[in-house]
Image (cartoon, rainbow, N blue to C red):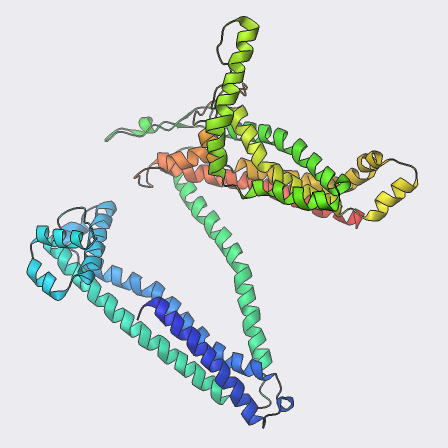
Length: 495
């Protein structure tokens, strides 16, 4: 029985247990729910939980442990000459075995007997079934694939039987425990509380896992490249080492050019996003009528739902060529020579388009913060004779300033982590320069480029991506923490 089918059976069984448990509680109480400690629905939920939660836990554990055991057993059965190969070659061999196992599961017994031990015919038969192979399989691969199929089938049957037995046992034990004074509500609420704690812990555990994996790989990188050369280096040239070459061919991994490009493009983006977003927030919160606000705010926030790759295409096909042609016209008017001084891929192009993307973030967050300023502050200022604009400038904005600053810092962290717009609009040139009309690149772009291709995570050229990632993580984390600190420190002054 497949895993989705087992889950469907457990779901149907849970519904049945709920109905049976509810009826059992009412029958014991003589049809009067007032004689029960809890509402009858809690008794049904208790039986359903006891029937499905342990069974689902067994299913999850089995799905994790069984493939590990089976794969290890199959790998131990490989010939000794295969075990002596590198991990990459063994991985390719195991991939071939997996492909064969899937294909042999599709073929009928007659087709397998007709093919026999001929690797070419077996490959052709599997290709006809839509299971292509990279090469002709060896006899030991065919035998391992058969063992893999047999073990998987046995594991699936045993798993199905054990899961169903656990579900039936849980239902039976919980069913006999139903009594008028049984505290079913307390038991059910404890399970729900545990589920809520587990759900809230997933984000924390995931973050810890990401950080630990990045730190581990970054540690391997710093074991081969000194940390001071990475953090204070001014040249980014990660040359790929040739076969048999020494460490001198590893290249240079200076972070400074990438960090400068990241901050420069983010700064230009904030120059575009902050004035437009902040002024639009002031207009919608202080001047716009409810009808205009109900139309303008959703339209503005549509920008936040556009994929960043679309912004990248917009920058590559529209904004970049437009700025390039405008610069050529300006150069022609000034000197008579039509030569563009703004490149199609430049810091200005990427920053401008990224700023457009960030406008809804600045506007929406600032609008919520400005709207949260107490009405009494506005009324007091207007009552003293101040105009509306003076009230906004002297009262509302100072009151909302801590929250607005926090929103801007969170938006800046969003800009620092952008990738697709920079790839298409700013290029991949890692260099240090102050001209916004020339291309630069960012940390995120180099993370993508270093991990692109069929590479092993054993060389500095690939491990550097983790060092870049943990550096970017630290920068954005510091910005977010500082933003939360500002918001929490000054929020109570205006509540």
